[in-house]
Image 1 (cartoon, rainbow, N blue to C red):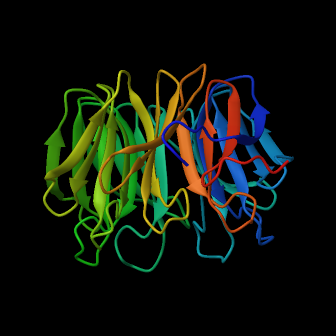
Image 2 (cartoon, rainbow, N blue to C red):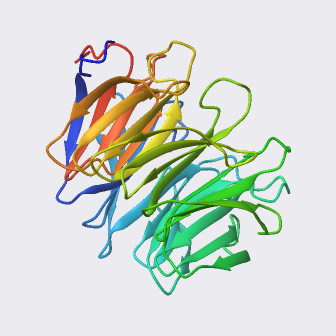
Length: 324
């Protein structure tokens, strides 16, 4: 697809509030991916990736700020972890029944499921509005460790940043700081300062060099790629508005990773991971709050799922051709 071509939408869902989070994964163990989405007006919904048909939903009084699909408690089945107001909740992916919850002093802004400390069991990492970064047992919800900051924690990601074979936690905060911590101890490894709040962060091999980079988007309109080992900047792009979401994955099936990013002014863009050159973009009428790259409908090709103000949309990553 050329830079001037635009992706064609496959399907969309309308909501009463902005779509704050979206995740593609097999929620109920049927061998097919679903899309899990959370909204500002308190809806947590699961939709068929093929048709967009709703499987189940839960309604809450508070906004659903983050959602993640993964096996939290080691039972071999995926759960949905969600930050809803001041509560972290874990639900059965099959039924939507709540398994456990954890209360916080302020709203939960980000959540990630992964083995933080190398014990072979998944933990849940969270960041809150009042600046708390916490790690909790996926089975029990018991806290393992936490870090306190003076500013809100907007994003968190668990992955091996520096190639040492151990997972780190990468976070972005309101005061424009990108930090990397040891998953085992919580000790900070390095940090980088920006001119605006760090709204999103992602760990993955952006440029195909066999090493992970950190991709980060800021309130100041910067999308940057940094060495996971040193924090040294590889490249950056400047936008006219806040970069609210970013995702690293092979969008178009060319064997190379791209960076997908969404902005406050309603732009969804796809960029070469190697060079930062834009491949294509789509303009929406409202801000793009979340984006996810994955095979939604089981056709063997990745799609881009994106959430805007009141709309969840699915777009072909490769050709943009509409299937139905």
